[in-house]
Length: 141
Image (cartoon, rainbow, N blue to C red):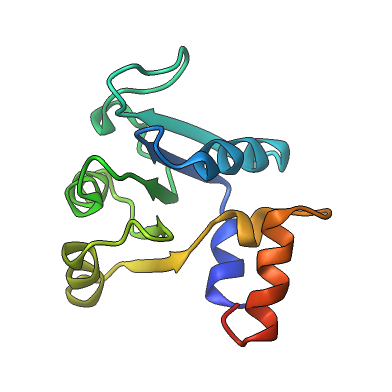
């Protein structure tokens, strides 16, 4: 099992979204359908009911964080999540900034970048599993 596949074996996730990446909603739904505990941190300014609006509201039992932001630098959010004890991060495809890349290299954290979570969580026949097939074909899975 690859590092990207084993990331999803954890039991408790924080998903940080600003509602600009549709795959974040699908990620939340898929994790919940697999029986995982999911805390949604919605920093969009118009949070959905039942979501958390601040990293400080997260409990201490969160294993991993999935971050999909375009309005805020994910590196800033990573710092707050690290203070909560989270050391495993998945930064959504095309949202990794130079600061995120630097943080991943310089910190003692696990950081997966450059991949859409749904390429690893999706099942059945859909755009995500087709993306997965193409990635495997070209050795990028």
